[in-house]
Length: 312
Ligand code: NDP
Ligand code: OXD
Image (cartoon, rainbow, N blue to C red; front, side, top):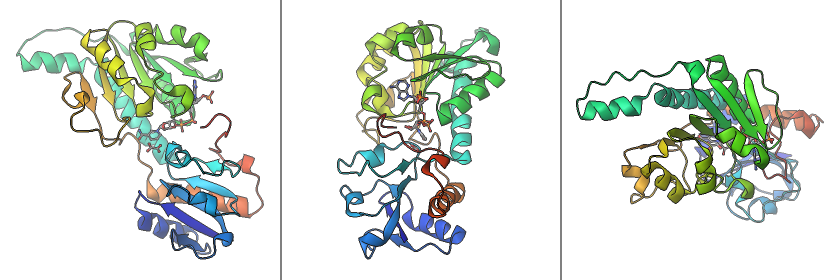
């Protein structure tokens, strides 16, 4: 029994060192030096080489270093019959809460308005509303989104959330499915996107859904770039229907130099840093999950097992 690291992107040596430090008993091998592929029972994955996973015939599980799994599922030969576990980790959740809360407050406190006024030296005492008068909606209320919705509700915002299935989150008005999308969007001042990249969520923010938002609404996208029809968003901002957007994720990353987002005055760009998987804590999650499975524990006892039918 051995564990293979198939990590072409993310500080592979540092991850291996951290995993070894928490679990010296593991026979950890780094792709492509994995020896006999039949001995590999766990794959720790971050942007694995296309076609690599299917060469491991005895996998019990694939452990993603990221919460999103599109960096694994983009491999058309990825073995869907093997459980794929996405990263669920306190540090990831805390980082995302910090990011989203900060950027929601920026819009709530009307900072883009005051920054524009400062640029032309205008003293205009427009007063922001109180939090209880500000409606914030989180699209995607899974592990990260639900945590954020709870935090925003705790801070006093009028908070709502939208998912595939109906949720019951104290203090949060929950909507579900395409039938309730308009009811959800039509009441918002600030929309936070935390959906995964799936065929169903592709360009979910498009001309039609943007039109459902009230005039002046702002958008914070920390989910995936695939969620937004970029032309439609730029059009909506230019027309004044959407007041601004904070974007952490993009269809192409790094964002190409000639992309209009870079220079748009009402767009704030962060380079996919909303929530980083921290090696110190996430390596312990991986070790815990491997030990659970190797000790005979059921896959159902692990948080973050991907639903292969839903694709996230
Ligand atoms: P989860 O799988 O826990 O949550 C996903 C949520 O999206 C669920 O509420 C799910 O609904 C909902 N959803 C999925 N498909 C649809 C659909 N078609 N219609 C409506 N709702 C849908 O994921 P996490 O919360 O852990 O992570 C969310 C995403 O955040 C990741 O997939 C990743 O893309 C992104 N991310 C970005 C980071 C960054 O640094 N920018 C860092 C980490 C993650 P239901 O609850 O009903 O299943
Ligand atoms: C993730 C990410 O999915 O960092 O974890 O985007």
